[in-house]
Image (cartoon, rainbow, N blue to C red; front, side, top):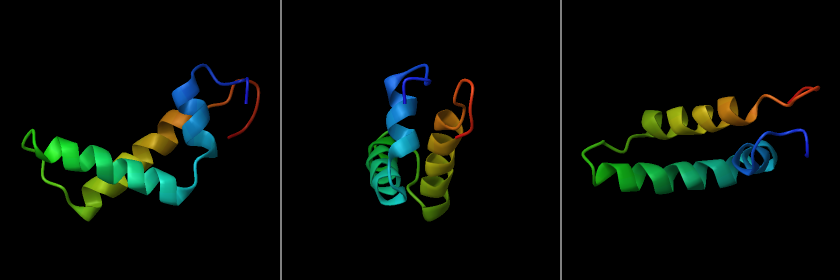
Length: 62
C-alpha cells in the first residue's frame, strides 16, 4: 500500500463496502446538522466519492 499518496486514500482502498457505508452514514448524519438531508442517494454519493478518492495508485491499478 505504500504507493498511495496519503493514508486516507490507502485506508479507503482496503476498506470493505460495509465500512465505507458506515463511515458515509456517520458523515451524512453530521452533515444533516448543517442542513444537508440524509438520504440513501446521498450516502451512495459519499461512498462513490470515497472510491474515487482511493482509486488512483501510483504505478498500478486500484
